[in-house]
Length: 219
Image (cartoon, rainbow, N blue to C red):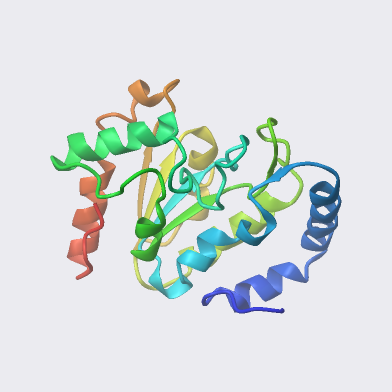
């Protein structure tokens, strides 16, 4: 490897050498050379660069990156400072306000402060072609992110998994260790938020779990 991966090195090294990842890397080299792909290459693993393995307290799973220019930054639901806050994130902030009784401390849509507090903001697929959601589905990323979840599942310290929507819920079977808390709800998208995301109270439940383990609350 050419750089350190914030405590993920051992797991990454193992996955990077597997045939599926060699094929995925070849696919991405071609895609980035021929098309407009998001996020920018240096930000593909941004979620892991901002949240060290040993620091993970909460895992939020997204689907794949935002596919419009200037939005994707390698962390699910997060957009760079100055970019209009996407509707799903607006709904997440609304649920935080309703659930905790106070507004989110995030200014804008950049969720890096959450990442620095141990919230791993990981999409199940880490790249996408501009304007084409799910365009990099079934190219190998799912194998990689499943390996990440399984690796975290084996960690002795408990953490919270927030699984919103059908794609995230499908990963529930990977979290088997009893020390972890798994919370599921509808996706915060405007198309589904009223079907079970609003009112899920995941943020106070996550905070209570962290407090029980002697860790600082996040929301």
